Length: 377
Image (cartoon, rainbow, N blue to C red):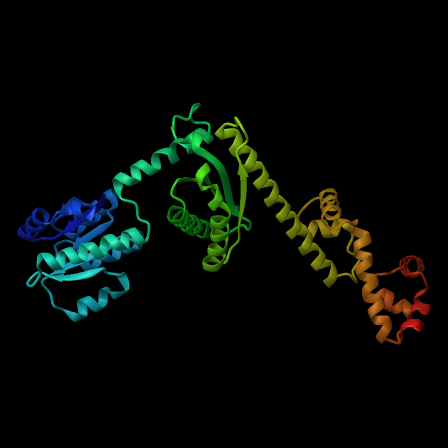
């Protein structure tokens, strides 16, 4: 059932709408009433309704200010305005706040009210807003699982646990703002609820966890791809999804931790790849400098030994070998177009010892720099 808050300073109007509307036919319940905007806003914060029906002219805080305050904390809550004013300017001011409908007291009838409530219900269903009773039912297993995985409870009493045979863990690959993560989780929740009927979605810190039942496994790949594509399209960030089937006789916590380790290992690999990619880019731009291992590791913000280990792991070459290869390619490119002395060209590209350069060039290319220049010009 969707919660309704009714803010109206005329008692007869409140009583009339309260008792003449079959709220349950619209999956709604009139949860709270207020005769002024200030009380209405306090009630709004307390009950977080799905629909607010408000008058415009009220004591303490008028309907326009109430709507502004509501929209500052809830962009999705449906709002209907009931007023005696046929005032275009007032209605115009409310346009940015996404009002679902305007009902004039002087001419309103049940058909008009029912039509407005039907429109609100369709909107709430479309955006995936969960009514209070449904919310309790859906959140119960989620909260149980969160507490179980966090070690707050020793046993999981949720009866549907054994049905779940597939799991996905999704998390941002980049260090993004918390707001982006919240938007992404909101989008993921809507996609999951629309696409998969028998599933459980849990938010655990900066990660999300989704459990699928065995009968929904065939939809797994499609939903996974849809989530990644939607988040990239609407938010411009990339989420990594790590999936894994449940092993026979594996309990939920072991299953989760096994998949979480895989997800974290993958994200760590991506971070390492990006760090080395940034280092290589810096090496290309500054190859003419001495650029020792200590210097480059300091620039990248890690220890020389760890940088050396990562560099070899990602590129397959040690740091000095890779740097000299960059320098060698730059020297060869200039030898083709420049008549400058070979020693000057080598010096300009980071080979400050001519004897070492000559040996290195001949070992890498097979002939001396002078002969290579002669053969390739």
